[in-house]
Image 1 (cartoon, rainbow, N blue to C red):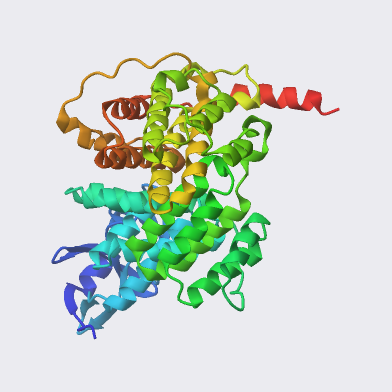
Image 2: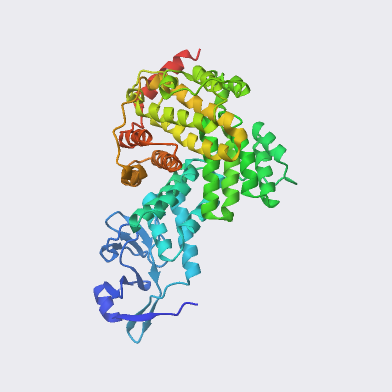
Length: 522
């Protein structure tokens, strides 16, 4: 129950003579207008950028225009005619020739509901600055960032056409980063980043409802549905699992096997599973369905890269894994090998301890990143198959971290995990010739990567897809450092990636490739 708080702010005749007035009520600054529809009051600061609305234009329809950016508000209701932030208005009474304004706040639950609805409008409009303002308002009302993010994820998950995306994958990492930051604005930035990414990924996308639960949960049917690319059956199976009380610890091994059943989506499937589980742990049980439903949809739609000629040796190598007795390869040796030869060499040494082989492959992935020939990322004269960039190299590190995490708990996953990591390192040989430069010795303090946090947070990049890849790579390298599977060479590779300019629009290359494609159509 909110206590009503009405205050005497100005004499009616004085207001009529002036037409409008600015009055202060504690920390509030109100604009009060004498109109043909009576006395009306609102916040003086425009909800867009804070310019004074008392300096705005009020027409005979009681539409108030902020002259700085032409935002227009219905002064009687506060509705924004352009669909942006609403303007707060206040009830007014005239008592004995005095203007009284009720400045009492609405009940907290109502205020939160209203702000949450306005946040969803901002997300739907893909308006990052408005998202930031609405989140700040919700935090000011005592709402936790986890509750804000969960509400948005729950409402927008069905708008992700192909399921789980980097927008959801980055969510737990942004929240974890916020935990480390003492600055309020930097923490807010971490909450806004995943919301802005969700907004971008769901922009103008209609809802595509998830399938209803199957009659009962059958683990074998879940795997079969994903393999058959049967979206409805796969979603129904997961929903049935949740309804039956199947825990994440029970579901995770099943989904990990499906994620690694192919060299899927350039490693994204396993990374997405890892981030879905981390997101659930952070947001709570109510996040299970939107995150796991989105995940299984993405597993169904994932491209199966092991079916294309470039990786045709993967499946035979998987069948032979464990038959080799050769010693571990060296990084120098693997840097000279393409995909087929890397797969063969890993099979040859497959009797070695999986973690030892993993370390060599992860070191090789970092070395590839360190010697990436960046001219490939800017050339305009190559075919589509040579469209490579930084993310083709960083994916090996993020996939490697996810693969180690799951295979350590499920040893039967090691063959697929190691051979898929080999696919990354072998495939990238063409674009990263030669040994990497020696990493300069780094002080022990720098290995905690704290010195890189400013470049992760205040990245200055327009596309959320790029900023989240920077964050994911940072997180993967830091966790591998903490686990003892990375060292200064990995940090040097990460620093090179984070400090490099990244060309994101390839106008001439796209035009050349389009012409070449069209000419070959007949």
